[in-house]
Image (cartoon, rainbow, N blue to C red; front, side):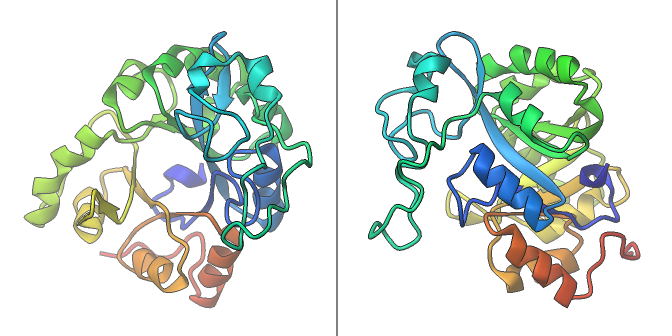
Amino acid sequence: MILLDPLARPVIGHRGNRAHAPENTIESFLEAVALGADALEFDLRLSRDGRLVVFHDATLERTTDGRGALEQRSLAELKALDAGANFTRDGGRSFPWRGRGVRVPAFDELIDALPRQLPCIIELKTPAATEPLREAVRRHGLAPRIVVAGFDARCTRPLRGAGFALGASTRDVAALLPAALLRLRAAPRHVQALCIPPRWHGLPVPIAGLARAVRGSGTVLHVWTVNEPAQAAALWSIGVQGIISDDPARMLITRAQAGTSNHPQETP
């Protein structure tokens, strides 16, 4: 799978084609697929009635016309919301997706809508979603094409040995920082991918050091959220594998212009 290939340089649509369509909606994901994104990244939470839903925030206000906590709404109530209500590209002067029937998707609905072999990074936002996801992975046969991640180790620790790749929690990444800063090699346990930002709570993350530390260990490095071509090119040049971007089309152009293929020669 491209998300675990140390020689690949995938472009991953962050919540779909988020720069141009409402995030974490089927419309946004299908746009990213049509543009040629190598993989998708999306978030999972659990509705009041125990259904997996594709949604980032704990509350509804930022992206929908709803109010309050997502976990207090049933799937039917969430499906009644306008998930395109607040999308704007001009600072709020216009809302081109408002009233167009864009909905909060259930996980099953999204998987049915996507190409059958498309790789995905699934971010668990709450430990409550862990066991429902395990069952959904089995039901849909997703294990060969997913990486399941979560900041909170309680989301991913129960999934060790479940038969699919896991991303590092915040605690897992923190454990690698001494090796990264001391220019040592490290072999992460239990995780196959680091999905990390360039900065964390305002502090720079030593991405070059982490890339060097895990090189050759079988663990890959994907960085979010990268929307500037120069930053993407620099990250690829230091050994990062995946670029997770709100604007996958721009990153695909950047990769082509930089002459970076999906299988470059391994750097020493």
